Length: 150
View 1 (cartoon, rainbow, N blue to C red):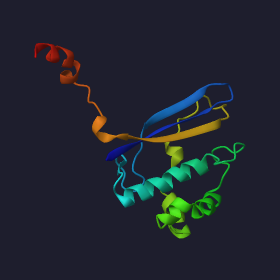
View 2: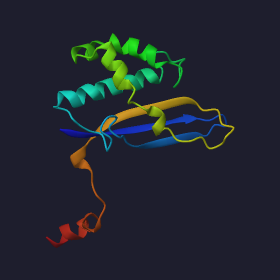
View 3: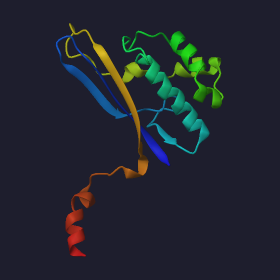
View 4: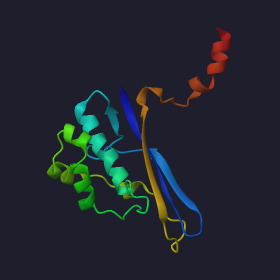
């Protein structure tokens, strides 16, 4: 099945406001909307690395860590030990090279104020079927009337 990669991210500011952003992700290597085929090993392999990278970038299992508290070098060490990524054939060198194309900062919104001190970041990733996207057009808007005529 073909799936689009969605994100929802943001942070809290020092004044209690939340800055949020969401939408569909760009493919980290090819650009354009990131669509994965869950039967394609290369698609799933890259997505698995990205998904685990996001988790570790946001602090992983350590709830005292926030976005930016963990270095890429530390993340590479953690991901190189991950059993799922090992099964997929990732090497430490390949992990290092690939995560350089992941730019989570690109997706985060700007702060509302120059005095803001962002904290409590979040970055959620999910996949949604491509074929379920509904385009809003006149045919869609008139659907109840078209059904009534039949």
